[in-house]
Image (cartoon, rainbow over all chains, first blue to last red; front, side, top):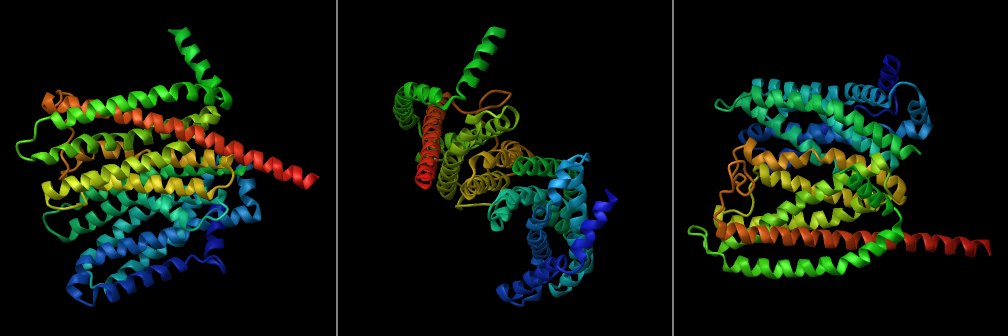
Length: 219
Length: 253
């Protein structure tokens, strides 16, 4: 399992992996927003956390359709399906590796992008913290979509359409936790804990469903 | 009891033969369509004889369409989830046909529920749409129906599509309890459950009975449409395989 983790990580980070494309996409999405809503700093600081979350969500989904595609193309997916380790664990490790390569850079980049959006210090911390516990859930949900797209002759956009509705709760509780940290009456901890619960829940459901879909589409 | 269960199981596995299923559908369908028509006639007359609400006036009659279609929207997904289990566990050939046929019907009823809710919300809440938990979760259900339809259309091999779609349907089924309990878990503009409650219904009988008849009518309508769609899907697959055979025989000669 550590070997698989390191292999996926290396594949993602080295040339042609494109893990940092997600960060670039994140940057592009956030940079486009001020052009759309106008450079009003007060408005930007109010919608900033939500924009950061949406940008991170889209960027996390962007790289996900390739999660199993490359392994499918070079045949290693069939070997993974045949080996003794349960497919569930393999998918879990692949998700964790993908998150480390593509999700973690987003979280590291989020405070910098927060500066662009005139987000205050505590709010930036809250965004980073909620992204840290929230983005794994997006990866696990997206793994189901990625596993489904392996069976599709032309996947791509359809994966995002299938996965995005399931990711809405993560977005809702992520943004409401950030708002709880900034505004006084709204509580921070309950939505934050629900976000943690969602991540744990999908860390079980996502790999299970993805493994089932991969098995169903292989034969 | 056991004989009943075995005979029911035999009946269900006997339907795996498409010809037998088509014969059964041909026999049942006219009756179901007739019952649906009668129920709708009775239900609509009762709906228009129900008294006007003292606050909402005439608009309360939207309820007799809105509530049943919202219920069918969720019921249809439950049927799809059961079919998905049937595909994955028993590999029943009809289960996949059932799930595929149900998706567009479910999307249509979900759209109807959203539309009538919006028309009802404008005079009552003063807005076409609010992002409250119940509305949002039903909207997510609508998106999932559309996604599943798109998925079925993107797959060219029905056998492989069946099991992958079944996994997708089961993952999406976590939305159903969220829809059901959204009005209890969050403070929403949408009212909480009032028909099915532990402490009895809070709707006055003059409005409850038309509603129940309409719910029955919608349920029968759903099953009629579902059986028709399943029949069409089987025919469509037969046409596809006949075409493939014809193409192959042309190639051979």
